[in-house]
Length: 137
Length: 137
DNA sequence: TTTATAAACGCAACTCAGTTGCAAATATAT
DNA sequence: ATATATTTGCAACTGAGTTGCGTTTATAAA
Ligand SMILES: [Mn+2]
Ligand SMILES: [Mn+2]
Ligand SMILES: [Zn+2]
Ligand SMILES: [Zn+2]
Image 1 (cartoon, chains in turn yellow, cyan, brown, purple):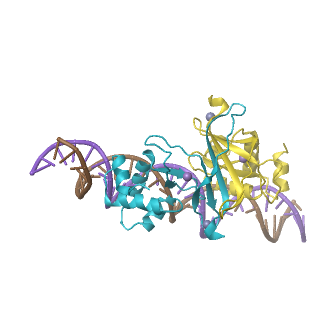
Image 2 (cartoon, chains in turn brown, orange, blue, yellow):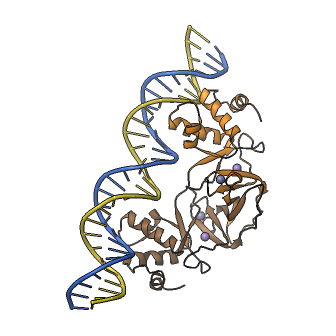
Image 3 (cartoon, rainbow over the protein chains, first blue to last red):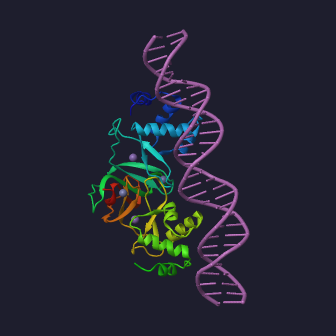
């Protein structure tokens, strides 16, 4: 896992206290995060708009990616090394726990290959699983 | 396709003009609908809260089911005959068009069978495809 | 070390989907 | 006709996410 400083440098993002802390928070999280969860877990007391803008910037630089959420919130998780600085490249499933409402990236489960059907041209596939996560079992 | 009247009768829902029109709208729609799309397409000029409450009631009676939406809106489509009055039972994929933003049920594509992995107990599977739909191609 | 610049930030005000409470209307059964 | 539960409308609210704008700050050049 590259140092948070190095990551921000690599993407020409300024190394502010908040953004350093945000990268580290994502790196240390086993599941994904919403803006509100970030506000609760982080030491800095930044405005929510700062959080939203950082998330948007991080997503554009392929540092984090959106994951599905039980309540249709915007939720993010760290990208893996397959993602380069301009394109997201994911091949894993996501798991939503119906008890704790967390969403997990499941690298063990790869996406099925789905072919175009009756006029639908498929450019992206998402596989979302629901149930109960290890901590809730 | 059963008559709208029969459907409302079957579920002990009152046959109001609005709800009859709503059932018929779903039956004649090739893709799914949000509350706002319903308000635009329907003749009745009901309050939005009436639409939301009808959708909630219809979903509970397994007349319609939620489908994914490009912008995280709540979006519904008609259920198929497999759903009984108390339980939803779906085995199809969904397709989101990145051009017109509609979501379609794709009965041709069945869900893959995914096994539990490393402590995650899977009780439901969702397969969401993205791309361009027949009308947009 | 100072200065210039773009990036990041905070505040406030806003948008918009969806919800809740409550009273009035209406479908339907008796 | 009457009673009852369901449905509806209005109004007010909630909460996530956005936008505008002026200020601060990280960083690099002078
Ligand atoms: Mn993921
Ligand atoms: Mn469907
Ligand atoms: Zn859990
Ligand atoms: Zn389309």
